[in-house]
Image 1 (cartoon, rainbow, N blue to C red):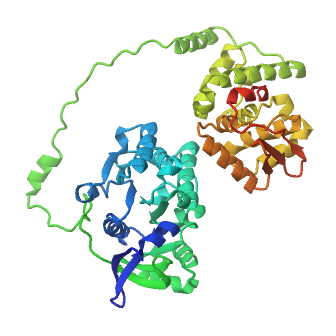
Image 2 (cartoon, helix red, strand yellow; image 1 turned 90 degrees about the vertical axis):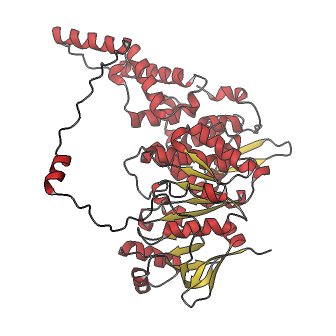
Image 3 (cartoon, rainbow, N blue to C red; image 1 turned 120 degrees about the vertical axis):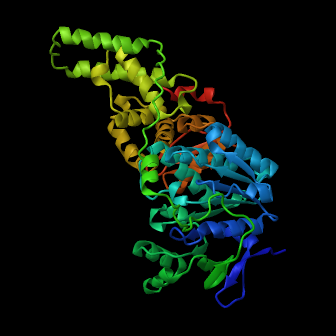
Length: 499
């Protein structure tokens, strides 16, 4: 049965229908400058499809919370929950088929990205038995899948961009139909926008955005000028769920409205200038001076303060030049410190910034403050260490080609590739899914298998299974191959890969 929902009317006055089943298979991109009517379009789409399909809305401004009162959506205030809690909420929402609104209002950009990524991850990682059809609407998608790095941390951007990429590139097989809306196509990551097959393009003024919109719609560049003439609530529609040719569409009315309506002109209050002066320039209320709570002494701060005081009294001695032998010995000690940090049970799942802080403190305790690497170098050391490589082995000529090939992958995947390369070079069994997941910093065995598939798709490895289900991985062009290994083996059985 085909389900057609009415979005409004075409410029010719005919009903403008959207094929909901086709939309679930092909995804949708909505673009238009501020004031073009994007949020109104999304609200119309959500209201019309609410009786037919489960929905979730990633709402950065709290515009869609009113859907809860009219259509029964569960409103989740992200500010009140941890990332882990939101991931669990996403999983449970899919399992119990509850429509939700993730309200990100009140959070800064970085925390919006982190919490949205966690919630989308929960939707994405749910077991196959619960892959029910679902519309996933992301308003202001350029905030969660930016084309270039902004002021947020690289980690937050990577988490959010990865979640959005999964939604648009791999969500279809899991029943997730991504609907993303953006003010600026030029600010949206191209690999996310390119996965949509349906488009609703609203009023756009900037040349770069018009050019990208015209490219997506298959129009000539000179035809893109028409986007400037579109009225509020009027969109150009194209796609298998909408129309096979560009079609003008005016969005119909909605039953609900945002909490904060569009500001309208209203007359100023009548007040005498003297009254206004008295009100505006009145003395500020007195400040309430609260006694500062004395914090507990920090031992490390005291030690550093004592060291600084001693240095002020006593001139700093000039260290003699370090010989090559001493430098090599210190690097070996730094490697031992790093291995000690990674030996902790939860080290594989902690963020790099926390690991680096602990690493620096341990180096200072060992008297290695003069050779502590900076954070970028620590990231490279961490990649090698998770692959079971020390500084001496990583500098071997035989590993130069491996390092070049690893650089073709995203940074967080390079350690996994190098771990597999080492197992292949030494003739060890192929690492298990558990070992690969830990090297990647994940608990998900399914993610580990997808990671191997991705590396194989890049043409770097070839994976094979024998008749007993054991896996062999061969590095392309290097002729290195692992011994057969059980993918389901416990991680402890892979211990000999560690240095």
